[in-house]
Image (cartoon, rainbow, N blue to C red):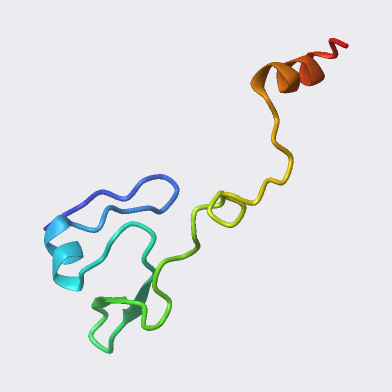
Length: 79
């Protein structure tokens, strides 16, 4: 399974490897080099998903009930 490295040093982990390691978007991975010079890729233990969606923390927290026309007037500077 060959892949090409980008100018930024990024590579795509082949689907077969992602499936074998049960990797999903947002998962952390560890890279090591063994004594033979082979690269070992592991799913990072205990790290799981990086972070929740940035909007999840504030979803449903608004206390002001804006009407669309009132908000648009405020944003446009219409009194």
